[in-house]
Length: 293
Image 1 (tube, rainbow, N blue to C red):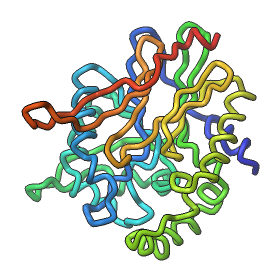
Image 2: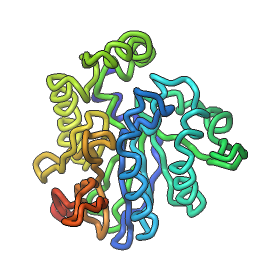
Image 3: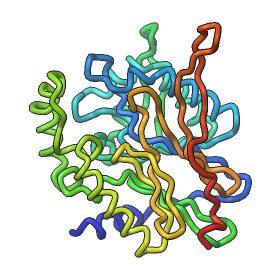
């Protein structure tokens, strides 16, 4: 199956959510939540993520995670991740209880596509005080989602984007083996993984070209993660990317509000009195659905 066919297949039976003037969605990808050890890339930006999630919860946004939320290539045990990052999962639970939580799977958490995975690993979690608490008992991890424009102008297609990458889609078990037993130890020594679209620029550009071609040929707005490079598309090239939560000094996301998309950055700033604070910055957009009709 070609990369083009793999991307199309992600939307064959995709669920549909409404995209109206009052809809508010926050799209975040590639959190790579780990087990708290040295290789847990999420640790450095966990406070940024929590602050952003509080903001979006208070302001009525629905949270859509576009895959690779949890690092299940380097880690085998999901329970360790939910325990270490219990405050984050308690925040996600607030979205879940308000029916404002949707999660896609990516290549690094591909195991979530199994029908019984959520029931086995996500129904409950251990809190920091050693108690067992309910988590997401009936959650469904999807490969794709479609935001259906209520005005019938342009729908938005959401998926992780690994489908454009042969190694990380068709051969993901091999890629997981290489990461877990080969590249992880080398990365701890400072060697970058050349098989990763997020760390290999030539591979990143190749994946982005495939995703862009699909969006243009299908005449859809396509939003993914996977490459970790944030971008807003154009009318001529309607491919968007949320970026990731594990940039060195920030995390990026795409907000959808009033049928418009904004690329935002969350980062730590310092006031003149040397007090640190978390800042939300709009770095691109808004790009409105009407611009594509």
